[in-house]
Length: 193
Image (tube, rainbow, N blue to C red; front, side):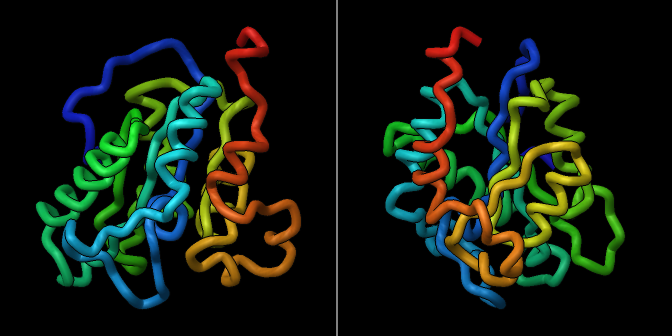
């Protein structure tokens, strides 16, 4: 389900940075849900990372599971307001995202949009095609890396949020945070792509 923007302008396939929200862009603790916009706290380098990704030529798309809706901890409207706050906070800090998609279902619902299922990426690709060979999924959980695998993308673990739950094997080749990952990526604009 797209939370933002209301309409997406289709463009040519572009390298896309698919980013998990909780634990990558904003603070996250196991068992604690962000259920109101006031609870959203961005990591200190998150806006700089998003701005750098865009400056290097990546479309930036946020993908997030929000089972707190299915569990009755918040409404669908509250989930949308939280995602809109994310967009505003990033904008205020000089960064922009191209789109935000979320799954409001619980783990037992068996939906296609709940990570690690690829439904959120499929929905994003219907709106704006991606150059999958130069795209990636960055997340802090095993489900984010599994989503990347199922969608045919490179998965990258960032060591913020709940990254330890992804396991030792996933930690090899990981990055301290999203800003460290953004700094390590090639500048596609300089490469002329």
